[in-house]
Length: 115
Image (cartoon, rainbow, N blue to C red; front, side):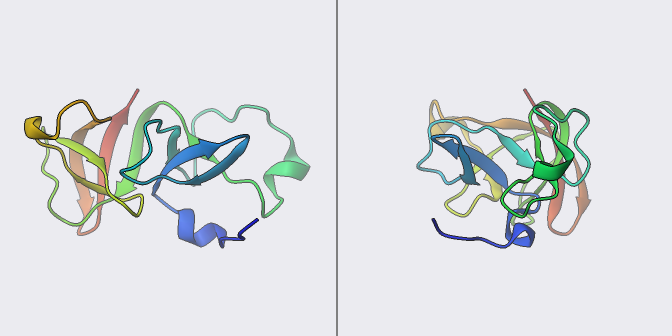
């Protein structure tokens, strides 16, 4: 298994391969959630496992912060790019997972509604 530093997951979209998480890409048809420093709900909570470098916290629902390329706009939609970041979604993109952009947090982060 490839070991990716936890810092590399921060604020990126996440998917599943078997029972393991990985940074999502635009090739993934299932988006689990977004790596979150402070998720509202932690499922399967086990403090020993949570502190293990193999486990990360993933926000599965609600208002989540995700990194974007500074082009996503409030009251529009975003989708996942090839590296797990948010980029603008357009209707011409078709039936790909997309999420409502609530507001810009700073130059490279947005707040989305994930459900």
